[in-house]
Image (cartoon, rainbow, N blue to C red; front, side, top):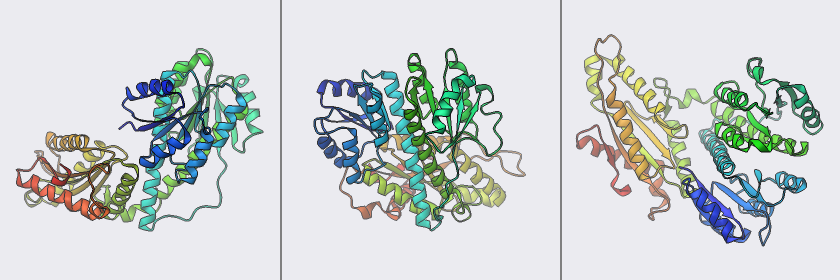
Length: 465
């Protein structure tokens, strides 16, 4: 599930070259030669990323952004400007106007692909948190917005003060964030609990590649720092390293020859995005667990799952992306309860929930909606991928017996799954047909088929076949 990229360039050969490169990495490609044509394309399907040349016949990336805002696409689709100029003022104008990045032609292939992956990943994560926050609001758990925004901080990480001090002084005159300094060896180790910076500026000097890559991996692996925004500052000779850093979790890159104004703009954009994401994350987490979490398994319950499924269906209808809805049920579960006791049954349910959670993506929905019944929703999954995922889950449950209290031998168990898949680009079913209740009913009927055919199998709802 790589995403859809809209390429806007007035020169056909430029579009062809980039289309071939991105399509080879399994991106779905759309093309346009002007702002007007791009808006027509977006009216049919919303892209995950736009690559926009700066020399369009009817405008530039900023005109595109203005048209997108009027059409309701504001802040929903990232835009990378492709410029033939290395002029600082032009790049600053584009960044200040709202583009996510400016890449200079001729474009480094590895860097373009890494930047594409990075930006699509960042916006997908933000979109998922927005979706979950909306579900919380639908349940009545949203908190009032706070009027006070705490001071944000930026930690410059460089080998010595001679590298960092010029940047620090320049940023202090351009930003309200608190600026601190650390060396790579102590950048994470000397942080006090709860004092992680909001952003890190990694200044990569000569022969520092291994140390900075190790630091980046550490930052992304530590619970206290994994949500920090990261801007890497590199020399022009480090572009291959830049692509690697983006794939490892850096949020943005800039050359060390660029201006302090550009650095401040990029950091402010990262800080703003982090502030929004943090607020969404806190809203989702605060005060709702008791009402929407199943106390036995730790999974979401039906009260959370049904509104969230409705929002997934609504988003799929708007974006044209498929999704799969599954109902999974433990086979002969009553026999386990009757012969071994409810403690054994509870142990099987808890372990089943753990296995399902560990074998699904973070964006997937999994909820316990009945005694031994689970709802699983896979956003973006078409029929083939959903079927493979369901079969994998069944095989995973069957492969390893369950440990239960006060029993010497392990308990074998299997699972049956009923599934329906919705692809908004196919068929003419009405919105009523895709209500949470209707989707659950279709998956449930498919589950009856799996039980009737012998259990421990996946059965597809006939309307999705």
